[in-house]
Length: 242
Image (cartoon, rainbow, N blue to C red; front, side, top):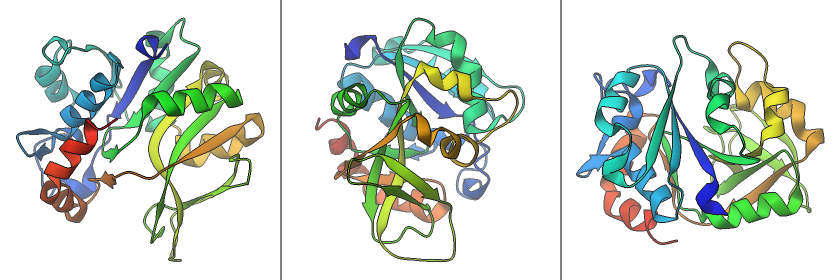
């Protein structure tokens, strides 16, 4: 049942590219409308019945904990996995393992991107395929900034291409994942990148991609943050449409 699944939000990044716009805040707390970007994600999860959350914090994580506390005010339960040194996306997930005991599957989300998605659907997609991971992908007109995901006709991920100088349309990783807990057997000690270090090594264990059609935006740069602010009303509606 979706009510029993836990979502890990990766909110510990340094956010160096966005500091000119929000110099004193961790990136996920960047203001958006009358709220913060992270609160928008929390409300999206809660709206769909996912109320067990783990915040994987790092840089300026104390500010996130002060703002959200245990999550009671937002009708969720939040626990904190706190890294004392940068561990990368895979390292942050590994550190959060103790908060995921007894859960066969769990969600992971980037804390600096929003995707209009039905979590029930991607969880079902993941469980039907019985792979180690399923990721949400989104078709964009220019993959240059994101890198692209190669998907075969069975929706199995065949490969990844990192950010490069080439441009053009394609599928990109939209920053929402469902993992089987067997993933923990594949995570090394110390810092590691989920995208660069782990995914290429686990393709043979079954990594699948579910294409999404809704709104997708991240706030990794001042330009994209400004765009997110300009479409806040649309983002807010999209968070509660599923």
